[in-house]
Length: 181
Image (cartoon, rainbow, N blue to C red; front, side):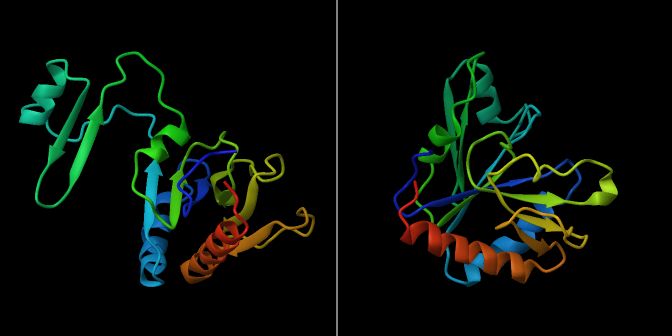
């Protein structure tokens, strides 16, 4: 199982492209913060990521060959680490670089063996993942729950972000008190 900060609950948010994962998180994170949780997010991307336009100093320094460039301002900082042909670090290694939080939401990384929520919209015409992935603890959907879902799989309303936030808070409490890592 994944190693993580002692206080940190980790859960994946998976779903097909266009299912609304980012929009759901955008609406749910403020509710979690209002409930007193510190929330981190790890976002997977299949695209090349440029944090600054090519003519800016940090981009120029990165292109000059620096392994890492830390860009700091009075508002935020970002570390750009060049993989230089190496594999992406494990999810555990990525999480370990972050500050401790009550909850780390992982958007993407659907093949990781971590607890997950699936955002499922039948209107996309894609098959759901929950029937074949037992790490999915709940489905967040704009469709009603099928009658034949497996036992202990929660079904949440995609249009009710309060319900999703309450579920995540309960997950945090249960995960932290049971000592899962």
